[in-house]
Image 1 (cartoon, helix red, strand yellow):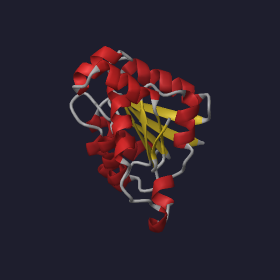
Image 2 (image 1 turned 120 degrees about the vertical axis):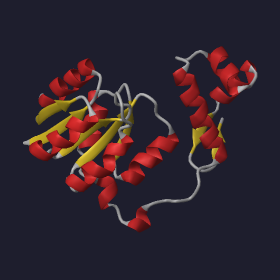
Image 3 (image 1 turned 180 degrees about the horizontal axis):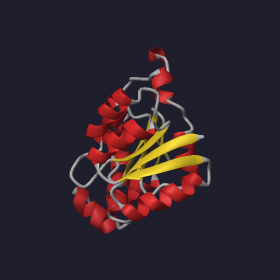
Length: 183
């Protein structure tokens, strides 16, 4: 049986995740703070960990290295309501296997948990370290700010310091790989 440790300070979300994932074959343990997370991890020896980035008193990023040192083969997924490219890169660099933005559906969560150490088993030459296209980065940043403003284009334009029509034109363009935008 797969053993899952859920480190989440939102009690209701932790309970919901625990119930959902129990139905999918996980034996779940919940903890709500950083100090208890290391103790429970040592006792429970999970095969998988769901780690919230914003815990009550500690940033979940600070738990990645101690948890990885304690359980080198664990599949670790960082959950956050404050997703950004910078924190995603930092989480993976510190040893997380995946990074998901809340809210997350069960299928996406299961797919992330079933990766079985995907990032840690990839060969170094498989990693593409070429920089992202600036247009792609801009589009991702706009999407993040738009999401934070719950889809309000006017509030997003004010926050980004651009005219609303300019923002609407940028939103109509779809990003593609390295070639920039595809109209």
